[in-house]
Structure formats: C-alpha cells, structure tokens
Image (tube, rainbow, N blue to C red; front, side, top):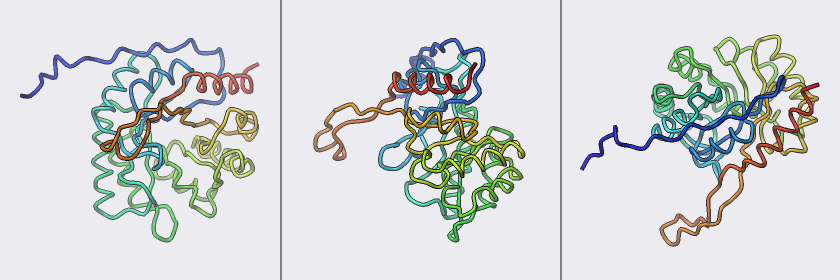
Length: 267
C-alpha cells in the first residue's frame, strides 16, 4: 500500500533565538536529522550542514527525504541548510560514475529544499579536480557552493583559493591542513586574508572545541564549523551493525560555542 504524501506529518518549524545585534563570525553546525536541526538552531547556529553517517566516515550524502524534512523544519527561521554531497567514505579522488552520482545528488538536494551544497573532489595527484568541481557548480545552478575539507590534502591551500573562487565556490571548510583547526592558526589566517580579497569565506572546521574559538576568531576566519555531538546509548543487537548507540546534536554545546563567538566578535 502506498502512503498518501498529503497525510505525512510535517515537521514543526524550529524556533530560532533572537540574534545578537552584531555577529562577526558565523557558526555552522553539522547535523544529521530534524532533531539535530532543532537543537542547533535553539543553541544559536547561523547555518547548518546536513549529512549522514558522521561518525566513522566524516559524513556522507543524506537522503532527499531528510533534506526536505530539515528544510521544512527550518522554514521561517532565517537559518539555512547546506547539504554534504559525498557518495562514500575514504579519499576524494572519484571515478566518473561517482562524479555523475554527485552531480545528480547536487540537483536532487537543491530541489528538495537545500540552500546550498558542500562538495569537493581531488585528482589522484592530490590536486583539485577542476572538471568535477565545474560539473558540481553547474549542477548547483547558481546555488551556494562550499568546498569541503578535501582542500586539506593540498600542499599549498592558499594558492588553490584562486582556482576555487574562479570556479564559483563561495566558501571553504578547512582545518588548515592539520588534524585540528586549532593547530593551524597561521594557515587559517593566511587563507582568511586571501579569501577576503577573493570574496571567498573561510570556515574553520576539524576537531573544533569551545576553548579553540578565541584563537580561531583571532586568526580572522569568517566562520566556525563543528558537529557538537554527544552519543546516546542504544544497543541495536545483532542487527544493529555492531554499534552501541548513535550521535545527537547537543544544544548546550552549540550554545556554549555561540557564546564564545559572541564574546569574541561583539562589543
């Protein structure tokens, strides 16, 4: 029996908190579901990145149903959702078939209500795959495009910004090439400086903790990205894939990060 879509429950809109008078550095939270969107917005997020399977993979493309549900929940809040498009875990050198899937997914998630997409592709030689990126940007049709942490494989990331800007990338998510963004402040500062010249936003992400925020703000980044996760214990038994729980977005951790950002960027 096929369900009637008109009778499906519509997620309740998220209630966004009042914004401070001035926010110099944006806060993006990676979420995996509607509940995560609620928690992130309640904590003061400016923007969401929606993905699936964060734990263990770094994030994969979510279903279009999830994209539509989160977009519906965010309607009227002023908080946008940008969707990660990544077909598998591991490296970022993709086959033609994998690139084709991502092009289709870019179109699909934007049609489902996403405000932008988060993409990235590299060649086997460790350079930005310009042809794949051009295909992703074209598929986005003018939608907001973020280049993800694939850039952290590049030996000279500042030099690569010109290529990304020319391709139509608006934002770059990066740890500065380090395991944790807080360990690459000089690189992030150089990226932010060049990004301002090119009109490309530099968003620090990768192992970001609340205590890292003042230094990241001092480095001059335009935004800070983290998942703000905590684990809920829920053993799935023999059919649960060997996991003993799942991650949820922690609204208190989002709020603490928001407070740290506001303390460093407002009078």
